[in-house]
Image (cartoon, rainbow, N blue to C red):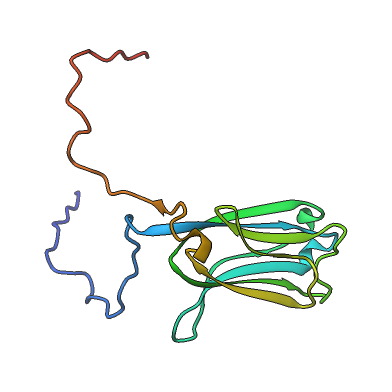
Length: 163
């Protein structure tokens, strides 16, 4: 004999008391690029970008831990961040920063310098605001909601399909 199940109209569990977080697809964001040329001890180096909150519990937006495979190589990460306060921090677990002859780092937004360097001990942090003061009207990225109306009138020419 086969069993059949009928759908229930009652919820499976009670509603959550925790709000869900969602990001609107129409929010403006600003691109930043983090480029690190690792030295010979790449597994000692890591970095993160944190969003600074008013209540003091900063949120890590992006983080990277170097590996042995990163030795003497460039690693570039791009991210699109909302308007606000951020902090970029680079760390070296041995405490000698990046070897100047080989390693260095640079953080930019639309080609505008946020910070660059190589010489630091255990860590070096730089706070910045987006949009950058010099790039307030620079190229923010916007994503647009899809439109339900057609972009143009329908074509009177048949389309061809190749199988």
